[in-house]
Image (cartoon, rainbow, N blue to C red; front, side):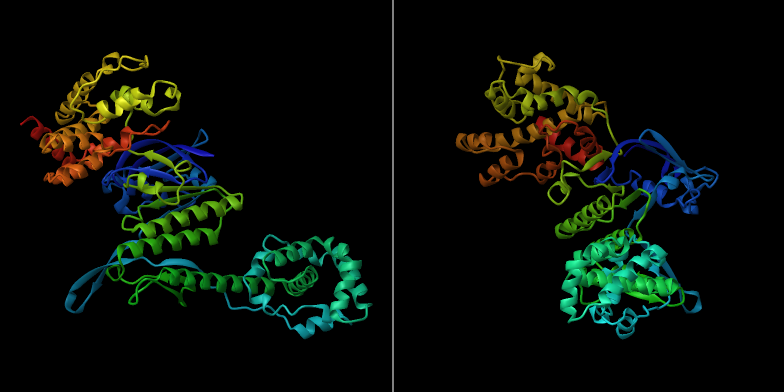
Length: 583
């Protein structure tokens, strides 16, 4: 299952945008766009849907004009699903969860009309609090009801307070245990057991030798028994069967009371889980998020301290993890669209790893349940930041909302492919080495390739001087706000800076060391060692000249570069470097 298009009309800052994307199920999907582009509008479009329609808050209408009809459409496997004021085809087929930081302003009135405001984190409701209920079980009564050899029954008092019970009975229809056929088969086994003599251990062995197959044939008991052993809640098959037998008997005696007790056990389990979860992330001895019961509303909530009492990173990681776990606990039979709206802007490296770990975990959990999930991460960060951590770069799906066609960069990307792609591996290696030295970096000597040259590349680019003339012209077009080749500008910035620094080196030895070094950053380190005072702007422009231009089929090289080149400060820095080079 894949989503190929997202279309939005009249929501927050978006009048009408149609994004062609490649969002794949059970993979991390990044939607990348610069700050101010409208990523929060995308998140709002999804979060504003209820099961029947889009219901926008007044402030979320485009231009705050509620007469402009909002609409969200997604194209799934070629089928367009639409949500607007009158329908919601999306929620008919998908559940949707939007995770964000939860920051909200809160005003407080004081004496004589004075008002103060604070920034707070909205509480997260985990679940409703059910009525307290416990299983009706007494070991002595259970043994007496079984008969002469009731001693064979294990005491399951502890199991009835153990969350593993919930796992053991999940998906099992215990109501079927009351059926005459099953009751007859079970009673026949009980009668045989009660006819035996000896200790509990001896009787257990007799059962294993003589009627274990009859026990296994009772599907309900067998399913529960296997899980109890699997989860370590029983030490042997016989123990697990008679634990399952008692569980089924409790249900049959009073199904409603049994259901109420499992609801309470589930609630207690969830509450303990969130308490442990918050404790594991606690890094402050002052204020921290707390799991609290709101008695009036009968709700379990996560309450946060005021925003200034938590660091931004602490707030974001707690918000993310709590909401991801909430999605897991609530579950869904429908595919889930999970939108994560830049909750990790302030995360340090360790918490960024934690973020990726939890997103990966929820993907794996959904896969294990044979369910579908679309984790969609809205970010302004360079996708490269994720490749160093948990997300596998072969699985992560990167989509640029401000996507740019290859356009004028087509030929220069072919040159990059020529240098790196395996399809040209049989060509003479020195040609590829020459490209690195004379085409992709500054070199005082021109070079011309006389050997093999792909027919798809401009023939004049065999000369390094001709290639440099090309990207120099593209740099001028960029600075003049004309249509330009973004990859060529990257090369131009790199080589202009390298040339400038090369000319400042004190002697031929340093210049030779500079030329032989790989990578612009490394070359600048050489120059610093030689005592050259390098302008700070040269380092800052590493965001452009350090762009990874090693070939990867299908990768979008142009969009992220254009996003950076369009920034006014970046443009000014490049203009200063270019001006200095010609002065």
